[in-house]
Length: 409
Image 1 (spheres, rainbow, N blue to C red):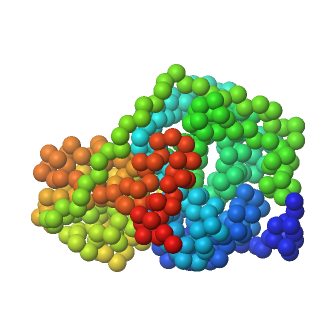
Image 2 (tube, helix red, strand yellow):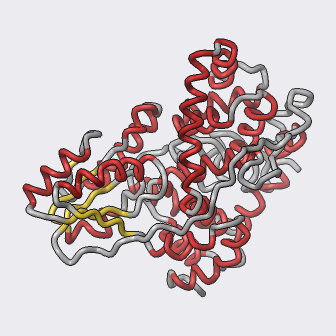
Image 3 (cartoon, one colour):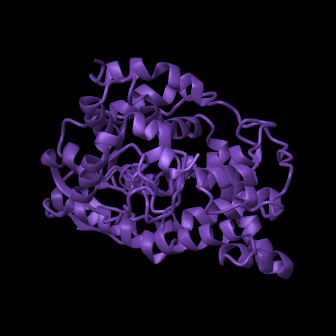
């Protein structure tokens, strides 16, 4: 199949995307893509034509990941333009992020083991010159596998990769280059503007054969050639097999932690990179608004740091809010004292660095007489409980979830 078959006009139209960390930019991109969320998306979504030709995919994930715009907003606007059947594939794609978040909430040991293993793998880079050389060759795009090398540079230079390309890249990293998946996941988290602890960790584990035990993903030259429209064809360069990785630990299924209700008394609102639209939900009743960068940003690229900081600044720009530094406890306590409040409200932080930081800060906040309220959105409450196995279970529940959100036809 060539691009003329796909678009009826030869080469697809040029359309690059600029990732400005503002709600205005996210809404503009959503509006531009809405007419393509139906059969156009279904037919063309798996093709990676390169960063200058993104007309076939939404590229909304950086804004959705930080909830500069929300999943519910995207679904609302999509179903206002398309029938549920026409937009079925796009709607399902929106729900994948919620699936991974819900799954990780119910398997918290996966995140703990990833963090522990990553420290060990990073230490191994310091101790093993050969491993470090292989790693540097990969992240600098010098492996000699043209597609992989171009994707590595594209990731660093743009902060984005097509979803299909991420699977190919991870498979080549693990099964052709033989590098630890944890280092690959960390490389993505350093550079992806939409880097999400749940989606990223679970996706790398899925490719490696750990998420669905015994089922790995093999990047094939023929598949790459087809879905890059012939831009790449790494025939003879890739591993012909993908023997699934194994681990000697079964991650238990645990209940989703309880969320909190909004307090009736005055409160201080904390906005994290997990949900920049929390300011729109609750700022009207807040005595003060604080935006909280997370410590992991220090290891991330300048591009990612700037996007997260810009998103936080944009979210509080009209609220007289304050952007904090990494020392959360001292500043939160001081602002709460000045505002004379005893309650702290934040959007529920799913498993990841923001949740880790809040967990670390919670005892000190309690000691200071402050009560932390983590308030969960209806979208998460309705979606996450179904994410205890594979995506199919969430997929079956999508009509009911949409109905619960008031979006059923």
